[in-house]
Image: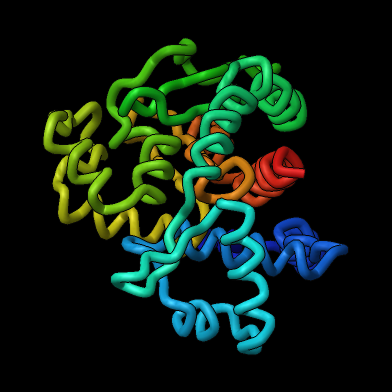
Length: 269
């Protein structure tokens, strides 16, 4: 997902650096990259995809697409539903899901990312992720600036609608997940700027998906603003956030986003 900064035009050198930063490298083994592209495409679908849908979306030639589908089927990561003729995820993916939870979820894996961002920006940084239906602060570190954001301790999960990281992860989740989340939670107005209307929030989420990051301006705490970007691919369900006095976020938004995107993208390598 490309990051689009819409709060002012950065100098040409900074714009080029940002564009270079968020440009994803191409895989050295093209067939492997194509296989994962097909797998991810199927994973993002609601009820699986037909071969024709996959060919259309990936723009692969017919023979290549069928070779990839056959290989993924043999490996057990996808299966074909013979009633609907759609390819869906196979049972072998369950092992990857469990392994992913073990490898990425522990705080010790995310703490170095938080520490680097806090050191490079001078601001308070957090790592946040989904856990048991909540959007939870997993790791946090204060910045070196004289005036920093308030401490939001690891384990905190309240008021996701007013936090940049919460907004980002909700925006990137499915409509069903968001619906279930808001059905059991009150949208509390923490400040006069907090968005508490679901229709307005959905419009805000659409903007977040478009620009690739979340920016919260004094919705959680008066005088403070927060930025959040996804860690690795947008589907991971984890995010990094920086919180600081609003004037510093406004002055340094481009720089902070560059640092956060670099660290977040490198975490997926």
